Length: 250
Image (cartoon, rainbow, N blue to C red; front, top):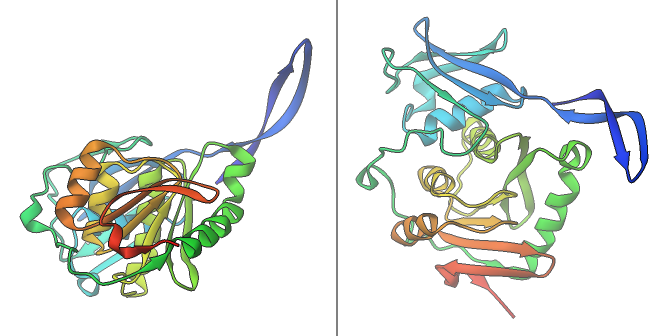
């Protein structure tokens, strides 16, 4: 995920040649029936988990028991029952917004009736654990972290150069283990975009918590879908943007 490269470090009038940690970025292809369906830039780790999360949250697969997904020679091979269009092809960058956006809300679940509660103090504690686990971010600085959490703490954790990839990876890990996610929350370091809300919605995760802030469209989508958004989590401070009943405060 990271490698060491030589760089020039400048501090005031001082220039020195040093070694530094740099985040790896590689293009990974998903191949179905011998054809490349998509090519994405991501950190080259947990590729199977990423592909499961990516394909599931884009409604390209619905039943993991009917597909086989495996990594082979830096590619992800998909076999079985899918909604993939073998005649299409697209490339995703390491920025957000590379997933399919023409998904109808009628195709997605609604989480307004999901009953789950977390105390804000427990969320603060888990966020501290989250920061401590973000080791590669501390080394290289150009990575995002995501986690699926419950009352006990962090269940699944991943880092990637793109926040949506790190979200796909942790959702993929949960799906592979057939984890029930309605009593969990998604914790991420990046901004909460509409894409992150949609991924959480498809996975039936009712709460999203972030170090950063949501966009207006993300708030609107979350409101319609019944997802709680908590943003600007810094130390013992945060903002709750909608569905506040799931978060207990002093």
